[in-house]
Image 1 (spheres, rainbow, N blue to C red):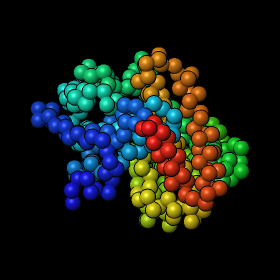
Image 2: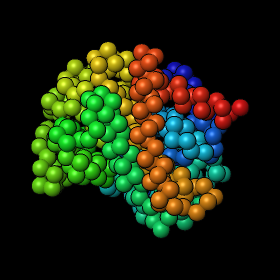
Image 3: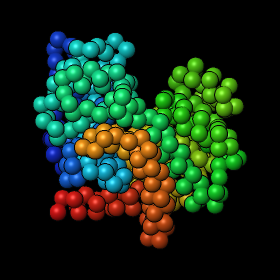
Amino acid sequence: MSFFDLVDFDDHEQVVFCSDKETGLKAIIAVHNTALGPAAGGCRFWDYANDEAALTDVLRLSRGMTYKNAMAGLKLGGGKAVIIGDPKTLKSPELFKAFGKAVNNIAGRYYTAEDVNITTSDMATVNQVTDYVAGLDGKSGNPAPFTALGTFLGIKAAVKFKLGKDDLTGVKVAVQGLGSVGYDLCKKLHAAGAELVVTDINPMALEKAAAEFNATVVGLDDIYSQDVDVYSPCALGASINDGTISQLKASIIAGCANNQLAEARHDQILKDKSILYVPDYVINAGGIINVALEIYPEPYCEKQATKLVERIYDTLMNVFEKAKAEDKPTGIVADEIARAIIAKGRN
């Protein structure tokens, strides 16, 4: 099968394969669409099973960024980068400089930022060789708190729409993944009165969540079958699949992970099971909203960023209402709205 026939290739404008023998850099940068502005999206560092898995991930993630930025009302297109390898052994300042040179060669069509296994200090190293970097300390900084805020507000919107509750008191939420965003989300949920069930590969994070939030800790494979109101995937993608959907007891899926649906058809399956799926690229847009204000010519303003992130609640309520009125899955409705915005920008 040719590259252009891949299932996840979606008329991407540019896909760049980058390597540097001296530092061990192997990376892929995907620019999906620049109709609304330069492509923007983070870079993740992951030890993929193979190069094909990395390519699939970057193609899906970059497309998601196009839709995410459109739905967030940003003047940005969608792009993403992945660095292939074990970050524990491969990370070095030289590698990030090599990556920065690769970003610089795209000449402003793609702005990078931190993502999984990459820190703001790593991005500061990238910034030494290219200006096409955002999410830097002293500017917009770490986007994780804004992603957590948007996800929290998205859960509130879903609970209001599905359960008719104006607050989260007593609402049971199963959170999969206690990284920087997932943990911050748990903090907000706990403060709002939610009851938490959590899982993660990091036992220290689980112990901390149990102590701070009175969270119930369960095994990695047990998180799906918990008797909760909300399942919140906050780790890597594709946790909603044929094997897990049958286990779900939650009536809402709302989390910060990207590409939560293993396949597009799962959107309809969730609707048929009366499970409200909150489109991932809408609910988790807080981070890129914050970063975008650093890319814009105007000076960065945290207060403005917060105000823009708070719009996620209303954006999602609009998606839910439209999906209900048209009897369509929420993911399809969000895609339709995003495509209309992108087409308007292109024209």
